[in-house]
Length: 378
Ligand SMILES: *Cc1c(COP(=O)(O)O)cnc(C)c1O
Image 1 (cartoon, helix red, strand yellow):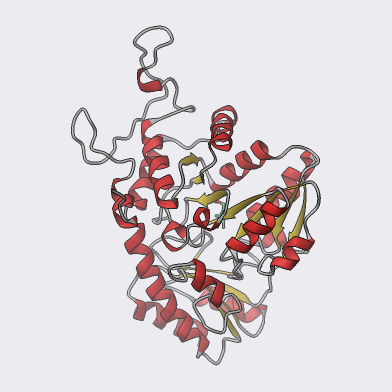
Image 2 (image 1 turned 90 degrees about the horizontal axis):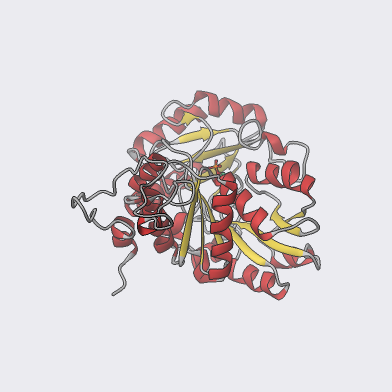
């Protein structure tokens, strides 16, 4: 019997506690475990960097929701990315990354990984030919985000997975913006899915975390080894909070999408807005691909105004949209990517336009959100 997504979000990895019947998986706030005899840890639990039952519950649920065999949870999205890179790559390898990658991902490649001998090429991944042109003989990973942050570009996961595999590279998809509810990259040919669970998965802006989900058993055991050997794991309470958020992912995402669609429509009719970047709009260049690989189009909307001054003014005037970094929580956020989340990409190939504003549309009453944008743009 295979359950639907909404059922798995609530039950996968979350059987009632066998001892007490507690419906919610307990927070196993422990660093170590009593062993029955030397070399005989109970159920394999020895030390919480290696395994912890609360983290196991989260990992199993994430794996089920992405349609993967194995899930691994980390202290942050960046910790998950770093562990993946250092497990898969060695000095001399090359990686293709999106030319509008998440700022922190770009910083990891340009300021950290490059010093350890990993080279990278930013490419326009919504065009598969541009992606292929960036491949080298030593390309080990093609790193994809779709939708991208903050420009909401769409990449064709199935086509890129074919291209990556033709080149003996792995296709890694950062699925943070879509969440597993809207898009399941493994079914489209991706080898590894990356999440910042800080965003839609946790969904309440109260915990930082990351995850990797995959099907390949050999790579999974190597990643599990590095998860323990490198130690970038979150604590049991973090796992518990993330799992608490994850249970309502399906209903939250539906409302995020409802509200974002209304916001995108409203902005596209506003005289002060020069363009709206939302894959749900028919004029978006990635609309067709997004329709093919996503259930709906998500809660992130970016838009451009006359110039940088106007963009900053809109961000400063918004009230209900809180001025802040991050995304994917129940509350709406507004930010200026050029000066905030993507400031570290200034002067690089990944610099974002100064007239750009990014919204993380929350699940509040949509009319209140539209009214706030109306006054902020006035
Ligand atoms: C936030 C984010 C990350 C990094 O995750 P952290 O949990 O902040 O370390 C990676 N990719 C994307 C797309 C993100 O939005």
